[in-house]
Image (cartoon, rainbow, N blue to C red; front, side, top):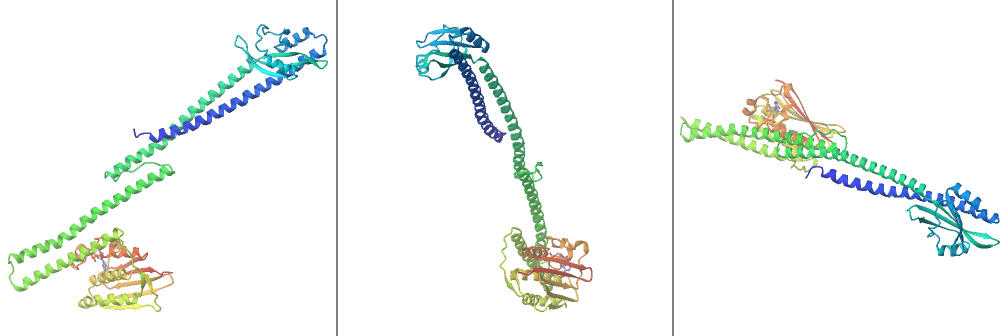
Length: 462
Ligand code: ADP
């Protein structure tokens, strides 16, 4: 099952790590305690044994009564063992019939003068610590003193420590399971949410949003998915609007083409002149379609980011003069005068010459298109940071409230006026895209009935 895969992985990992750490730590702590208690007890019993030995050595004859009292008092059993392994006398609770703790190899060591210690379990299963030391009299060893202390208390202490360790280990283990569960839940829940959201987005539900508010990697991922959704929606709406506009723009000239072609085909013309006029309309509409298709193609390429700039050092004055030459005829037809003003010491600009020319031509054609009389002035000025190109006309102007919108594709101030003038409604959006590609800016100022000025500011390459 897909759910909680991360949770399970994380859980197994953390729990295993926890178990390893807990087990080794627990064993270590237990070892330390156990060693400590054993050493303590051994020291104590050894001291006691030495005490017995000293008593035997000092009192002559050996005072069994005193030793017995000391043994009872100290809660141990004491054995006076001879070289042959026989018990001379003993005191304390331990049954002297059980003599398995007296081993010949130990006796050999003892009678060589060494002390020994061993653990012993009696027939009833009780554990003892046995310490034995040689008993010297007149420089010869003639017996050994065995002292046997029950390890019952020590075993009980160690048992309770073991219990405590196991209990805290189990507690820590449960805690780790709890933490793991919470972490896995916190981590996998938003991830599952995001997975579902991306699935929905992929299936076209572009309004889907992920609700994750954490300010961490998971939160950033959620934000990125939301941004992706917004961007995809914008792209889809844009594309739909684009296609709607294109079909609308193409439908009008095609209707004209069909209509006039049909009239001519059916011979419904009265004169040669009328026929010529219709043919002219058909030609104009065909030109318009061509213009529109070219603009559309340009714009589509730019929107896909497929346009590369071929930058070179460009002389703007020459470029503007050339553009003016190209529109000279249509300006003259409308009786519009063209002027060019250039500030002295004009620097070259580093830009794509062809694209700059496209910008200027578009602005210039619009200026002529929307000006009935008067003049159009082109000027170039510059300062340390930029070079500015102005295209100023004395035309019909643009209403203030539309100045922002004229750069949007297919936006026309008056639907009829642009068509009448042969525009596609795409010119300025192409200009805006080209300007952006150059890291330049475009600005427009206009007064209705007085005229319009477009200003393009190109940054100066350092
Ligand atoms: P079009 O091909 O219709 O001219 P543009 O994108 O070039 O499309 O321009 C958008 C609209 O901006 C035009 O339809 C027109 O209404 C307005 N416009 C552009 N330039 C001028 C200008 N110099 N004077 C007045 N109106 C203008």
